Length: 77
Image (tube, rainbow, N blue to C red; front, side, top):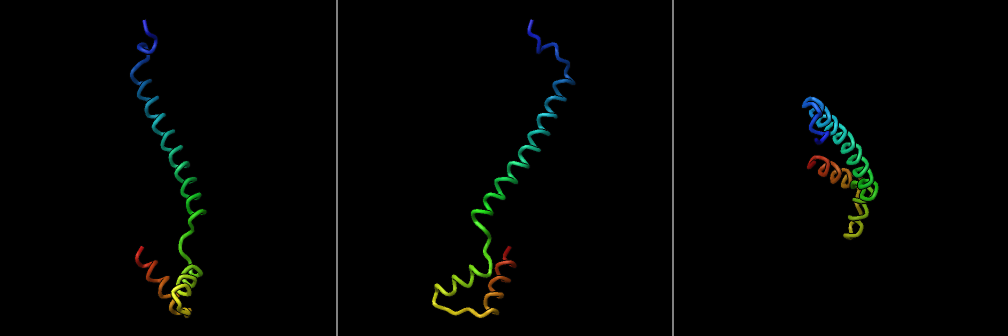
């Protein structure tokens, strides 16, 4: 007869729960690694980027304007 049928029900439940917990832990660390890699390739917008965008539009931004844009972007989050 097949040997896996002789495993008690609580053994199967423990294996299923253990597999689920291991999957959660591996998924957490994998998603954290991928997110860090994404942020390294695509950094969030900073003040220097805003200055560069304004200069490309033909404006010379003041520090007050740059800070206002940064504040509006942070408030939108």
